[in-house]
Length: 111
Image 1 (cartoon, rainbow, N blue to C red):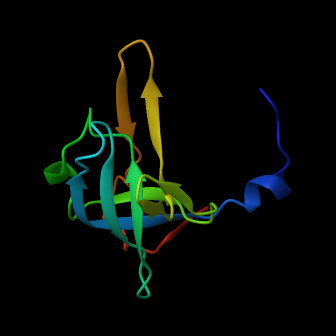
Image 2: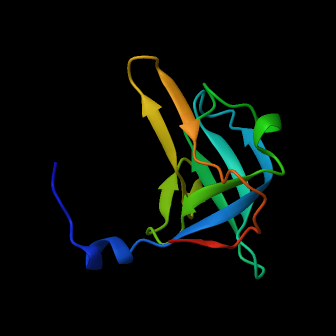
């Protein structure tokens, strides 16, 4: 594993985003298209390969942690403008999305 210094880590901007909409994409059996509110009128489209573990109804109106300063990535016909943070357990073939354990405003920075 490559190590990074604190300056590299500080370049990563992680914020809490509230998922406003979530839908399966017909073109993919693993992707969900999310509409995420990061506060201050910053609403973005995020594509995530989590549909095997989560349905749209489990995500809508919930807050999760996202990396928001990645370069946008074109996936299928969409531009993904952030990345939801999740842990993947290979042994159990299970994903767990990182979620605040208390009520917190969307748009809050994760430090």
